[in-house]
Length: 403
Image (tube, rainbow, N blue to C red; front, side, top):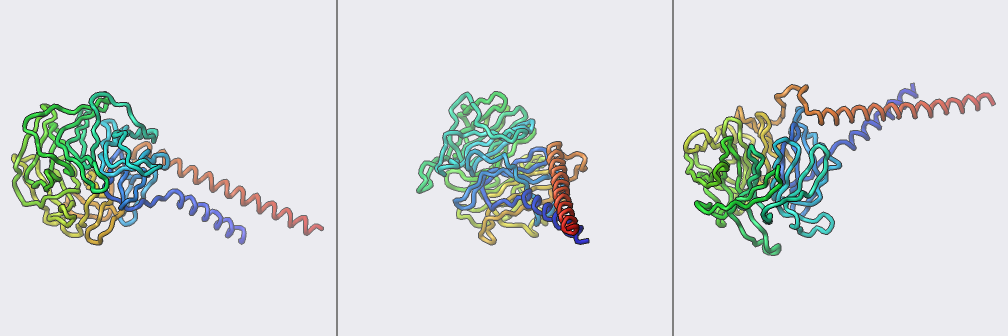
């Protein structure tokens, strides 16, 4: 009986140790990037005050979870080659590569700013970061911009800010359109000369199925853009258009996030004023199916709605998943994840994927199987060693008794 008790205790310690190693608790942050590849929501970069970390980690969206107990997973071989925040990250059409562009880039060793490379790529299948060779026009240094990718694999990046003085944080804002061909790996600054928008940064960007990029809010000429003043870029004609949206009034803002739903609605959330105070409403919906576009404010969204900025938002099935940011209610960076049900227009605390478990990504299954097999092997080894020791102990006692 004593033998079984010791055996159980030994196995328990082994399992506890393995779980401790496999669990990951990320630090609070804002101004990070988040992208979804298959069933994974990956978090890239960001900062908390002056602290930055290069870890790459993710939530597995093929499994249910509660947002008060998040099962974060660390990709141990996926550390970024740099520290960066206020950059933009875009996933290739085939879900094989993450393009990380611009931002406040620091050398990990010296912690000095280093803008010598503006584009990094992450090979998702091999968990490897690269500095790609890019032809074409010179790649400008930019921060505080958002990129989108069209159905031909071209990334579009509009305007942005370029810091020139790290003491006063002064810099210059731009309004040109840059593109990166993800197949040709060629950079191009488009020569659009007519109908140019004002100098802009910190906006939200979403590309519609018809190739129109919708730019909302942000800063322009040191003021916040009115949310009904919509900038549109036609990627098929390389021309700018403008629209005055109708509907409910929405406070101008920056440092907010948005998602595009399959039925053509752009949901914006969060953000702040120029002096970093709260905005109203925190969540609003722009219907791009109407002409002109129309703003509306869901009546039930205000219940349990946080006040944050510097966060990100991603859409997975009927969930808008909001990660991290700075919480204005408690004046702290946060490590929370918020879940908004876009079908019922309510905040929820539990994430339940609608896809059946048999449709999990092969990579997630491989990792799960690998961990399970490794756990079994380790337990078997532990039992073998323990039994071996007990057998030796028994033999010693027998010898002692015989003498």
